[in-house]
Amino acid sequence: MREAGASLDEALALLATVAGEGPRYAAMLHGLQAERDGLRGHVPDTVPASRPAPPAEPLANVPRQAFLCAARDAGIADELPSTDASALLAIDRMRRAESDDPGRHGPAHGLLMAWRARLLVEIGKPDLARDLADRSVRQLSLYSDRPQHIQAPLVVALAVLQRAANACGLTEQADRAAQRATALYAILAARDATYTRDLAGTV
Image 1 (cartoon, rainbow, N blue to C red):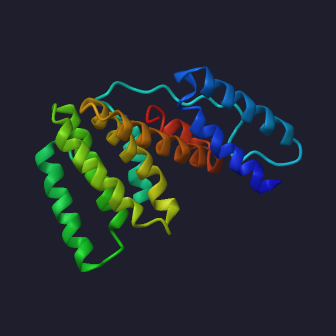
Image 2: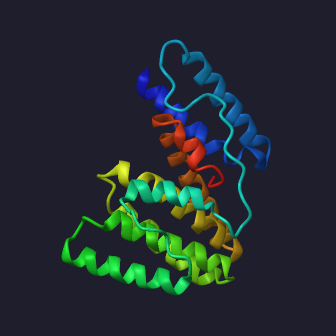
């Protein structure tokens, strides 16, 4: 029963991202919600019931506070670079540190790549941003054994990837990124409600 409840919560989080696309998706969401409601009182929620996703911000602006939250989890204590050039230098330094001590700086390296991708979107270079955000997601995914360090960074990296892919007309890639970000956001929100504040505007 507990596993069924968790599976339904994950499915609901994913379906919520496409429920507005047509009556079939809305009906599926309604049916799954009814099934999940039948388990309440028997199985604790892993995702809060009917919590709306935070509103999406404009294309070029994944919120800075979301990156600051992700930086905390990834182990970055320094200020985030303010320009593309300084971000490039920070990524290079992190890459060298990672080669000297493999694994230690991996999540921080991945998040800095996502931050630079955000800056590239802001200066009107979505193609470069999309490629870099995609590499950021792959870099962070290498550390799936450290979820507390990569889940928030992945949410923001996927948010940047979604915006950049949409700007490039790659809607399927954007939709996949949005769905994955929404599922991770739900997991984080269930673990600690402060993530709903810190990551608002990402999904």
